[in-house]
Length: 339
Image (cartoon, rainbow, N blue to C red; front, side):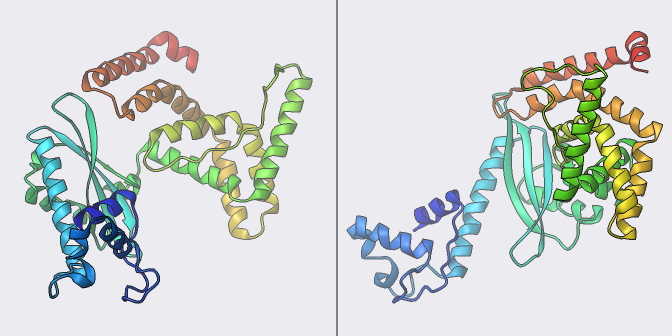
């Protein structure tokens, strides 16, 4: 029975069926798997489902939830033993269940005894909101499982900008820049019509550059590109988004001008006008080039840290190399060339 429950959990399959009565044609994954197990083992068939002694069938939702909780406690215990007294980081992401109740999914990231980086899904807890005060209450979860809060060396939250706004009341310059970049990307790529306008503007720009001899032609070169939207949890996506906007800067600027003049309503025209002004400002253009230069260096480290087989010594070397390259970017010669 527990083996059937484990198999369904590993495959991410639902347990319950719409009709679990004895005469049902399909009692759901769990009951049907138990029936199949009974056909393979006569001893199991004598003690499960309708052949169970008294009420000892253990198939009710309440009993199954209790078994699931015990299994979860054993998994968490194993994870805590794996961490031991080592330092660890917590990764927290917002999620919602089928009843639309807010939850926080918690993942622990640490370096194991062999020096390899591990990420372990730890728990899902229901929360009323995602304020800093609520997140602080999660410390009791670590205490209950024997993890020392003082060993936490990093915290990462999905939608981190909103978290910091709640605590500090303001966004940093980098967060504000990517917030504006995200708004511009969303505005341009929100509909097929605007994507078509972007492609047309790109084709016109490529044609003009080729006529002036400012663009080389080659097989497979100068293909149509699209804007990429940054996500909340992967800084690598921010690099891709910044590069795509830099490559499509003039076509995006033209499309924003079209939306500004011919948007469906006042709200859309106002958003396009704000994006048109922002993308044409020196501060935005300077920060766009600066972020591409910096993240071109850090992208190698970002991709390296996402490898599952990465060990801590290699990571430390990668961090050291990245810091050296960033310091070189700040020296007088390279910085003057950038300016």
